[in-house]
Length: 149
Image (tube, rainbow, N blue to C red; front, side, top):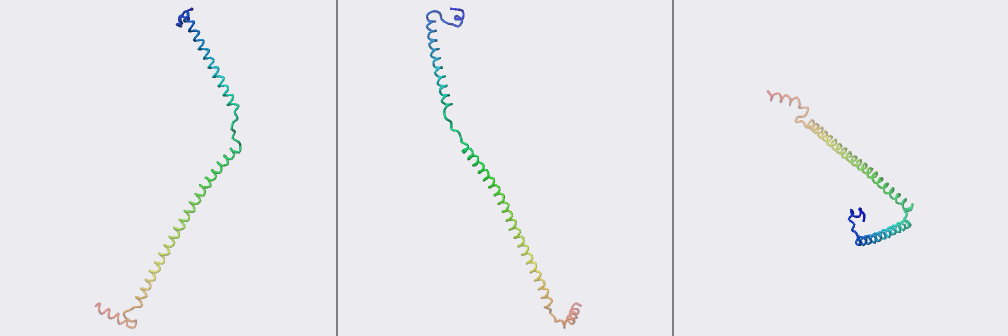
């Protein structure tokens, strides 16, 4: 036994040789297991590499692209038509409000004209309805002067 074996703590004699044989047997068994594992990995890789793959055809990709563009166009068209409808709706509301204001102004103008006519008729009525006929007017004025004195 050499110095390295003593430092490493290897036992001497037959026991040491028995242990060495056991460890060599284990090492060989371990090597065999690794070799089998390596072979199975290589076999699996080869099988996976040679396996036929499902390749997406151009037709599938083009349909997906066309469907995406179609949905995008529908979205844009819906947004634009919604904006146009909203603008039209606001214009209609403004037109209705303008018509209501015009009707209110016409109503106020008709009421003012009716008041003017009533005032004119009242003035004509007061001018026509005298207490004293026009021939007797000078006498009525003299009487009014006498009463005030």
